[in-house]
Image (cartoon, rainbow, N blue to C red; front, side, top):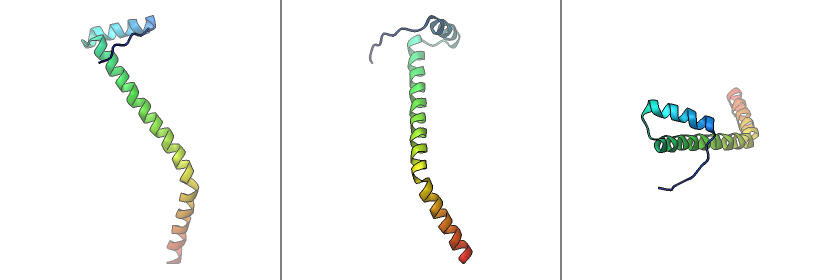
Length: 76
């Protein structure tokens, strides 16, 4: 495990301490879980952004393929 020193805004620290007293969890565990949650959120957002970019790259080709399939249905 790594040791990290950080500065937390007073308001965030106070709110965190209030929550910790109710959830009966150590500050260290709580911060680890919060960072883990935020990392997973950021990964999802990065994937979403990448998918949007890639989707836009193939959008034109996909529409052409769909039009070709439509033509095949009408010709049958």
